[in-house]
Image (tube, rainbow, N blue to C red; front, side, top):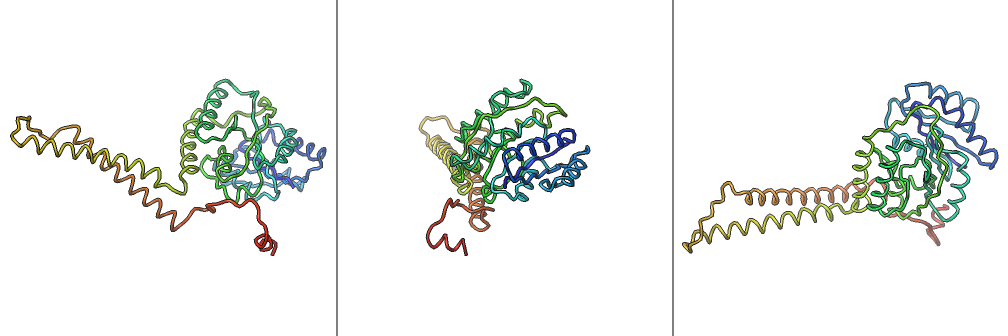
Length: 323
């Protein structure tokens, strides 16, 4: 069974066509489909259309949020209710072509756990295309996951990934990065990107600011999620040592200046270096304290998922799973 999770936000005009295209692909390829439309607080007739589709096609299910919670929440809900071993995601605006699904599944057979789409030829305005390319280059540089289009909504996953990867905020675009950090194999294929026929983009310029902040979060989670003191403590320790060295220098100079050696007497009040030294000491102490608190939280409360990821089992462990 192939589950298809589709976040919906004011896409009533495109849903019937999208469902028809999905049904056509499933019929031609012999897929057993599980289609989940997640209405993320739409204010148009999207939910009515979803209800109508579910009434005429048993393969269609719908989830309706009480308000708009965001794409990550919609995907998370869809993943939680999916039944297939493989899960596809695509946008509801018809720009993602369902006829690409067989190519995703073929790529998954090449020992991959995640296959991401790459809109190499993108039918969007230039003010969306070029900032997106710069953002993707930054993501590749910071995370080491060499995908050309992290923002692409058309992706295919093994269902088991979402037993370990937790989505919140706007981390949906970084699922391949989070999966790769757990040891899952990630790849990509070029896909057909179609012009928009209905509605308008739900994302403005602010998404790049949010995306950058989310990227910093992902970098911290994947690099130091289990050892926060390594980064917080390191920065804090450097700050504390620099502040301490400056304070020792000022103290030593102040003492020597009062030994009648012909050196100008040092007056500490109002000196900027003294303020910088105190600030560095306080900053260093705070960062190390926060690092200790973060370590205590992880040690006693633990992360939501395991700190490891098992690929296969053999011997007695395999029999335990069967039992």
